[in-house]
Image (tube, rainbow, N blue to C red; front, side, top):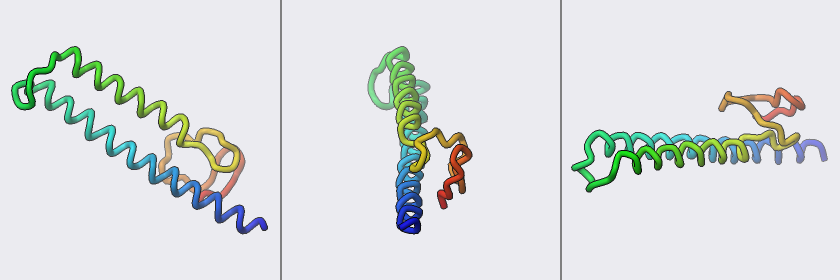
Length: 97
């Protein structure tokens, strides 16, 4: 029974890790796109610089909120920290990979 739980924990961690990597890529793309639009507002239509800056703040805030909910140990539900390729949970010692 324990091995099935370990396998499920690892699968859950892989799903969380994949979502986190995807969220990082999307956030970077959107923030950089808005930075380009900010520097060259004539390329994509007229946007105020305040609106573009506000959108960047919203995107970064959404990413932080998503990370706070997603990037947790599947076993103890504690935050995993900044290492995206973590092998073990520092809080409970559960093997993640």
